[in-house]
Length: 367
Image (tube, rainbow, N blue to C red; front, top):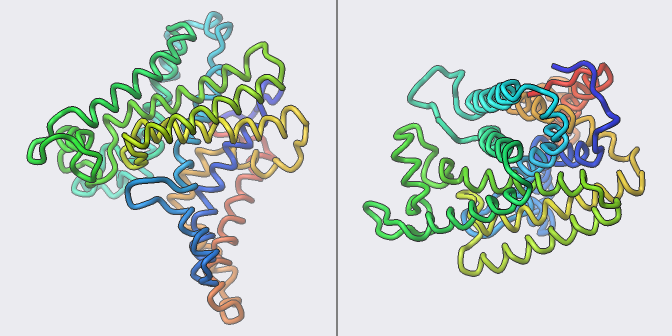
């Protein structure tokens, strides 16, 4: 826990973008689903679909949530692990810090979605959560950033994508034949099944080999952080971020014609396309907040973003809409089909007040 947040070296747009991402996780998806249930129009149905994951192939806007989380973690690395900072500290201390964060994120992932607190081995999952994907991406990206030249960030990014693509298309899967990008029939699923046994995450999502994609996504964030932390002018940074973003989207779409975009197994085409969108979002936030200095509007996002991990964990462990029902109970008779949507808003309001109180008192929980 850090009660003394230093803001002079913070990139406010990164905090705001992290908060924007958390808003999608803790509020927007539930809100638009309940909105569609209340109104039931074609427009609200389309919005609700955009805030849910597709069955398998393709992508929706909601698919950006997890990549953006990884991307922002990577974008902060050039600031938290600057060469000067590294040189002024014992390397052992950095290893200890990085490994500690890796372990904490993994354990929090077990608590949030791995059913650790159920104390029931039959319902435990070894690897199945966004926080654990962040742990993997963060750990390896930090080691790469500390020990290798900047060019290796790009080289390893490409190698991760190429190697993972080959692993998803070349090997044979026992009982199915050659690996194909279908549920339960790809090599990544087979590896998860072999390594984790009955503790693997179903027949759609994959995690162990998908770690190559998690590292690549985090490294794309490192690239963005390096651009911002470089000697380029702010206008050049915005342009470069935007160009990287457009290139990522185009390359991901082109690769997707042969190697389809599948978020659930984190295909390389998905990494490229989602990272491209992350670059574009950061270019917009950076231009508005850090270049044009339109800062005030981003305050709610920054309140959420600075304590993002806290918001993520407690929103999964505590049902804030249920708490809101105690305060909004009498309104159900007047709001009808809109009542559940109202409790979603009320629950988010309670969570936001908690985060705002922490922000006001300079209580920042760092994991």
